[in-house]
Length: 305
Image (cartoon, rainbow, N blue to C red; front, side, top):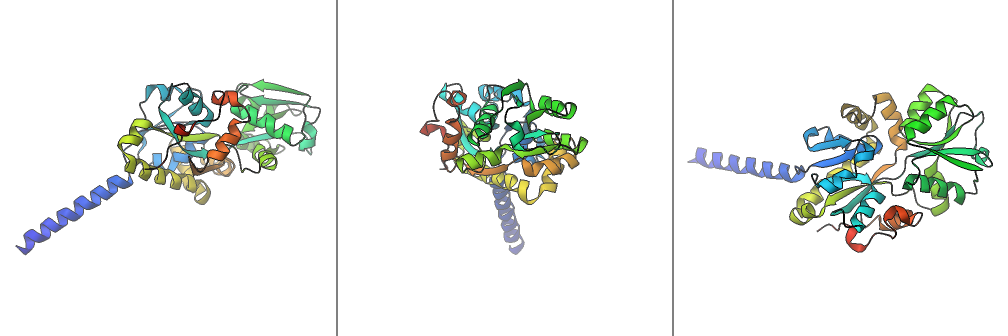
């Protein structure tokens, strides 16, 4: 009888442990762009890669229409615009990336004053990144004579490396990779300029979105997953080596050396949707066209149940 009771107790404990493990590790599916935004999930994704899909940054918005994933990491403005247009049911769960843009040049003794009266090359015209970069420069009294555009941060990285007189805006990790090839490159953070203008420590660049159906049907599991994402984001500050190794294993970044050097400049940190609302609206008001013409409405923000 004692053996039977012991066996029953053991089974109960095992089931309880299993239930707790399931609560701690919800089996959600997640889509994210490769590169810097994926760093927010790296230490989670490396443990269960079958549940995480990393795609080219330019294709991530297609994930909203497919509704295949429970969660999506994407540019915040893209998610907001699609939601406003009725083309997405995904709500903002958290902001996870706060700007990885830098203005850089290999000019000797390059300073921000050198931009005044010069030509500067940005990437991705008609995006929130370009709008924020222009705003941050103008708000700090920096006035280039002309602004030109290339398609991507990789393109401005290439120009930075090949033209000794070029002044460009590029992004991490492309900047770190360039500096490892040419130690003459000097860079200044757009986030620092943005903070000087607004008081905010970065702008709302990339975010984690949750499908409305998932949020409604599994609120406790959603909240548990968000807690895990918060920890994964924090690791970008507290355990850079682990994030770097995970990012390389997942193919998000090219090698551990570049990853470890770039991660501290990628401004990855977790802030729940409602806590970030003021900063979301501050970013939106820089270029409302990128947000569908207005700041996001109340129902865009996920509120934990």
